[in-house]
Amino acid sequence: MVKNICIVTGAAGFIGSHMVDFLLKKNFFVYGIDNFSNGEKKNLKNAIKNKNFKLINKDFSKVKISEISKKASFVFHFAGIGSIVPSIEDPFKYFENNAIKTIKFIEFIRKNKLKLKKFVYAASSSCYGLYSLKTDENVKISCQHPYAYSKYVGEQSSMFWGKIYNIPIISIRIFNAYGLRFKTTGAYGSVIGVFLRQKLSNYPLTICGNGKQKRDYVHISDVVNAFYLAAMSNQKSQIYNLGYGKPNTVKKLANIISNKFQKIPNRKGEPFATHADISKIKRHLKWKPVVSFNEGMSEIMKNIGLWKTAPLWTTSSIKKYTRTWTKLIK
Image (cartoon, rainbow, N blue to C red; front, side, top):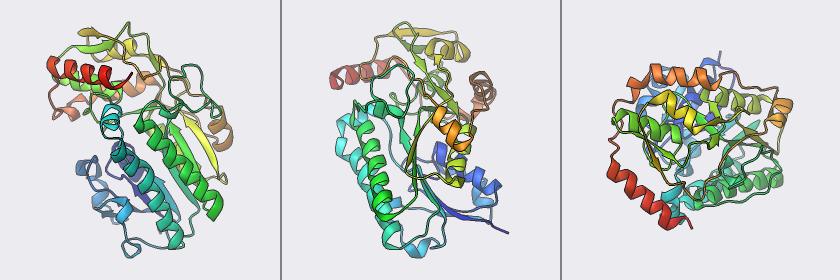
């Protein structure tokens, strides 16, 4: 017997597809919404075979109530677009997708009187800007680019709607999620994705500066478990940081993936380190990370063939994006 009905937006994306699989194993009925502008259908190849999954192939902001069940109890909101330089080149596109459409979606929930037990919003730690020390949820917000701002406005709008209209909202600010199905496209996505793309193209890994920058990498299985526990909890109107809590250097990451490197200048607009203070989420949700960075990266390297169709990465494209970054990030 199916226990609960839920909605996952961005269901074909990296995190969204893992969330779908997790929920199906928990015997949920899942409505997966994705317009495939960023997601990939292959990420849902197992879900599509499951009788408890229904795919809605459209923009999440255009879904009709007749396409889902009014009995849905949970929403996991992962839909959006996320890359820094393109957000600077086309800020309204990012604001529209990550902020305005999120508001439209919550309005859809409100107007159709869905009695949700929880709406869990996937936020971004980029809202903390250049802050490089251990970061709790009270650190001053300092968005450095339109992507960060659009995600932050989406979060704050969700929290506001939740407060005014009694919708139980939780926002989770993800630091550096990684794992299988991780995208390798985009020069200014996660460093793991960039490095994998370069490895597959047989090009040296581009290390900014001395490579001592640190990132707080959290494995996808720990990410989806945190979202699940947030949905099942009695908490609402809460914001949580989500990381492993122990950053690793970019140089360590590079050494795991390859032995060929190329140094490029440091990129402005990025923190030297990201380090999530996860004491609040551990305390409130009884969550803790399980998969260590070494274990997670070992899984990726054993399955690196899954990324064999990654687009080629060339020295000229590296230089192009470096010039773009330098021009746009002042």
